[in-house]
Length: 279
Image (cartoon, rainbow, N blue to C red):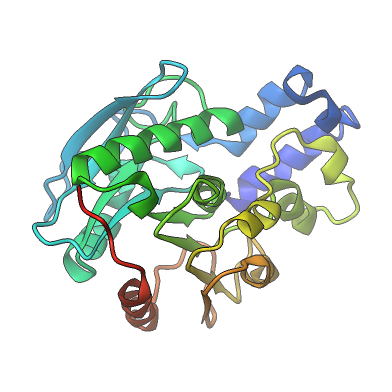
């Protein structure tokens, strides 16, 4: 979630107090959607990246929305990963990340666009993007020949909330970067005097959900993150009940790339994951 996206969201929430209790009937819901999600629809982006030839993945969400992703296979993968991106852009901006995950870390990986992003149809919403992620995981598990519970879930920023929600169904591992405890808590950081909890209809309460995932967790967060406070990453780490690792990025801001030290920690995390049962 970008800083500029967070500010107007809370300002608009001032219009109607107590909207969270109205759920889908809230008059703020369309405004929240437009200000929280910043999709770049196709053909925006670089769809023929250098050094990467991904396979187009097409699949359908439970409500019939047609979705698109990029899959990068590996002949002998040490893991199968689903990558959930942030609230802006589309998968065309993930080419370098996919290349690193595939070539450096030996993963077969799928990055997908939520509804309304890239080549995916529809309009984004909290419930919608969670549906999308489940459809993506199902496609990936079938394509890679593993059980859905053997997929490693990775989420960055907004995608962290998506990955934590998916992990409640089971996952080989959960990897989070620069993500929040909940959307209202992230907004509270920018507007501490406002009752964001009673105003926002989009919740994504990862702090509660992560307690339901007993598997291995790797959380990284920059201690200079200006969008989502460093304390959010720490709180998620403390709430995770299973084996867990926390990686502090010294001086790291919200959109900074991961340092080499993180890559080493990520490799070590992958080595400790339980074996996959290939189909």
